[in-house]
Image 1 (cartoon, rainbow, N blue to C red):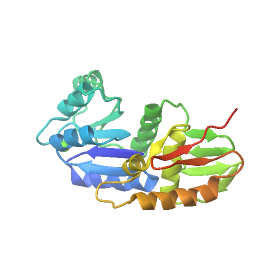
Image 2 (cartoon, rainbow, N blue to C red):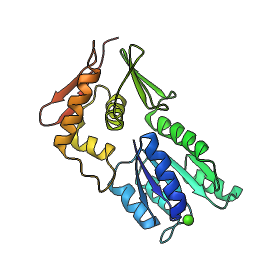
Image 3 (cartoon, protein in one colour):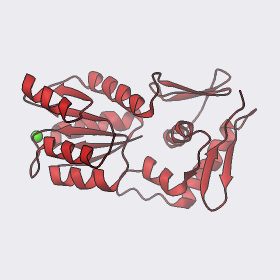
Image 4 (cartoon, helix red, strand yellow):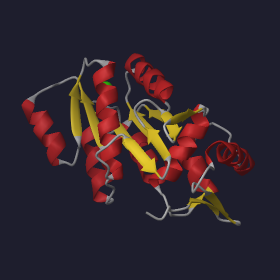
Length: 223
Ligand code: CA
């Protein structure tokens, strides 16, 4: 799961970065509206956390341009001014949720979970796949109700594959979904993570297929 934070208050942004990263999200930050606009146009994110009072371009304009490009990515607006008009305007422009500063990090985390879940079209925080289940809230995976020991990166990899069961996921897509800007993760490193993940989860019918030269696919399990 990849999140972009558009926030120019560095103290607040640092708190958000710390909290969301410790939960296992890959999080990037921009400090101006124009940067947020460019980043959302160029990269795939699972959620945008958008401050309204941004330098260079107002958050409302970032949101308007995002929706005009046809993007359905969930957007959580942050604002100091909790006026009803602003709230209504944000929602009318296509925001999914709204938080007024100051807020409790715990509440923000819960809303982030709900929004990323909604983005995937699932109502539950638990993704099931045969004997395998993944709990996105607790960041744990189980096989036949036995917890599997997975690193943070292996968990994120598994999450991406589970969200696209039966579909091809390219190595580039995996790098894009798992890595923050400035992080050097090669396609070879992805192969290593896949190898480790396979050793831990490939039991019974669970299989990650390699599609030569293209990527990977978590194979569907016949019901
Ligand atoms: Ca601001």
